Length: 501
Image (tube, helix red, strand yellow):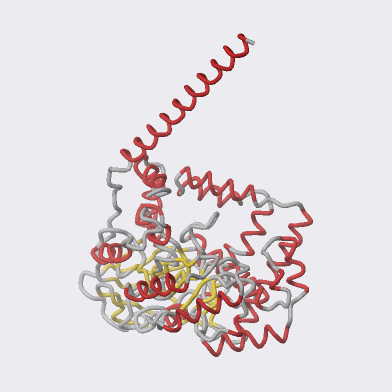
């Protein structure tokens, strides 16, 4: 008995000592990370604006069935397109940088209608967007959306001032959201106060990201409270909700699965799990879906399917590993903790062949619905949900355009969804979305015709963002900058610190 007591005592001392060592190690790591994060990350300055002439170029017009206007000349003065006309129809301004673009194709700068940002986006995300011709974006969850602090000050205003001044390489942010409503139950007084604050802060809308099985009555209460204060709503649609019953139209519906569930009589039993996906598809009600799409078209509700980050992502994850090209992008441009997290999430999504077949059917149904929505007059916008696992800023938008073409849209319609359509939807069509005199100089020059093959949007030879020209050297510098930052101790420490601060 004495020996047992002695051993028990030694074990307790050992465990206590181990706990102290572990706690001390965690505390030291915490202090070290915060110290390393004190240093200010470097910024990548944008090239200076200059007068630019793009000579003998083919203009891509994505309106209607799409067309190419050959042998054109575009002059950029400052950050504005000052002239568009036949090649050599106007004298080149003195001192202009002349881009001889014979055989190349010029389209408007791309707009990603669904990205997410972090405080480190100037180092990790924005240069990737510009290098890929994504010159504008809608931020559906900025740096404050990750914080429970309602007094958090968003970075978007500062970023835009820095962008205009050329202090950072960044896209123009057309809209930015700092709050996600994720409550399972509605506290009407608290929500009314929160909506009032969002209105005061001039948030574009209340973003919904609710429990998928929230009761219809609770969902209706949220809509009623928003409507009473004149605040729009957008985001994820709970599977249990019936969009046809809303008194306040949604500004936008995000992700293909949100709309797919609305077309099924089995949506109340749908949980998002594979075991319920076949039942959801079998419950598809064509008449209900047609009625809903007509309603959405009439209300001018935007649909941002983000196939790459929704049903397409589920199918890719089920196949065991990221594509090799994506793995290389992740290795180059992600901080290590994020890369490890994405791989954990991807591994958790692995499925057996039978489940892969279910996911393939589900994805095809989602693609077919996007085509049906488009043909019904619903405004389809290209968005990526960049920052979600496996979704790289900039690179992902080209893949999403390919998904839209697989859905049945023409290349012109896909490009329209990433240029003219979002410019109109976000109220900036007078300045963005097409190549016309007086519009802002956001342009992408391609080596091949994207109207013939949507994959040609990736064949970029130069980007002009807000009148600043990024030729191959500047684009390479932007990519190299992100690669360096992603492997810098300060940036990694700041990324980790962002998990609690």
